[in-house]
Length: 148
Figure: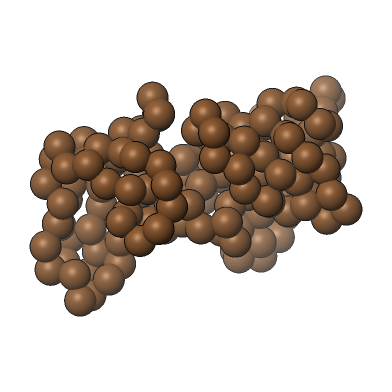
């Protein structure tokens, strides 16, 4: 009684999921509320986390100017203390050898973060304030949902 949500290569499905279900099913994902603030030919400018603006590729179908949308942010698309400008607090930290997993509280949201830096041997303890950045090239706005 199921239905096909998306057909494509593993890379296409991971990087450009057609639905929230697909994004959540294939790997971990943070889902952030966003609003379209400007439309360009191939990109949309969105506001998320209360004030941050990013250009993201225009999905098909695309939300219109002023409409709300869902931004998919994979844990590896979040940086800590490497630029950005959003203040967050570490609420969970797990050292897993080649990678470190964090949960960061920011603007009322909790973001999962994965750092895979083999040179980094220490982790930020719970309660540490950090500067959070999002890598724009790795962000993806879900297509506007259409009624069946």
